[in-house]
Length: 93
Image 1: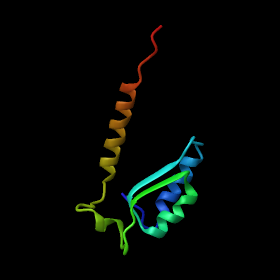
Image 2: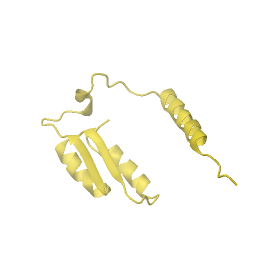
Image 3: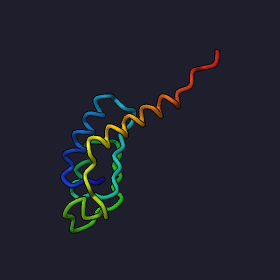
Image 4: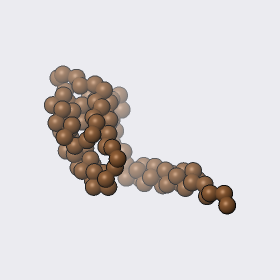
């Protein structure tokens, strides 16, 4: 959704980095200028489309910034897992 303090993104990037990806790219639609600059240390590439000033919070740039419920997250993860399984095709012998 965006970068305000960057604390959540830092934690996520460090967790992903432990899995040793070939490349770690952080991309967000909006963020505080200073945070977008600071987060560069956590990734190979950072894309922050809009760095408005003044920046008061990510929510100011969304018409609807309601919180995602735990149930919505569980449903999305379950759906993604099913789609991933459907995309895996066994090799032809």
